[in-house]
Image (cartoon, rainbow, N blue to C red; front, side):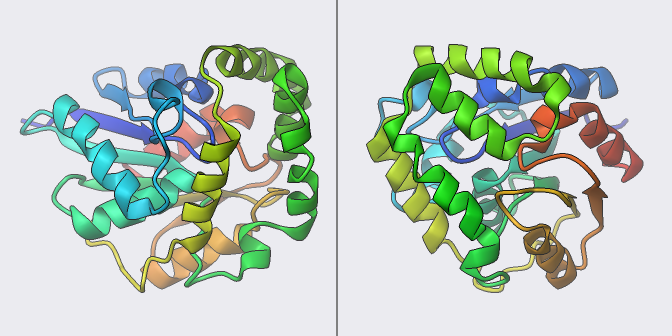
Length: 250
């Protein structure tokens, strides 16, 4: 009897479970019998009032408490992680390799495989320096213009992100703490023992696709390139992600 699939989803920098938007619907449609759970990074989402740890390892240990509360013995646990969430995924697989059976990484980067100017493009850094001066919908629009390339989905995504920001705003302090944790993170040459699928966006204007390519090469993992989407691939083309996961038999 085939084990029930249970997808666990991690978001990225200053993002939370709600930012997955309709990707959750597409994933459920693609895997109607699967369970889907989201786990927020400390400092965002349901933990937006909690200080965000200054290391990825501390994030893992805190998030693992939520994982333990959701998991069931006998399930096939599949991790889906984007951006900063991908760094958390790597550390998690290194220190708790028994927790997951498969992993999908989306537009992530590690400093032992890619230089800082690829992990955060200089043009993106200059663009992001304006974020602390903005508030509310204007701030979310500014971020979305950097990470999204799909104009057809821009307004619906912005409406969602604006709503989330009003409900659970991430503090500037936690934003800085997450940036520090991400910049410091290294996988130390770790290579996972479970199957890993890597998805990247060729036209990502925030993080170079070379980062995902370098991880795929080091880990000998399959990689798919989206030709037009931005850094937030799940916002730009959620259906494409599900199609690639199914194509890879994950």
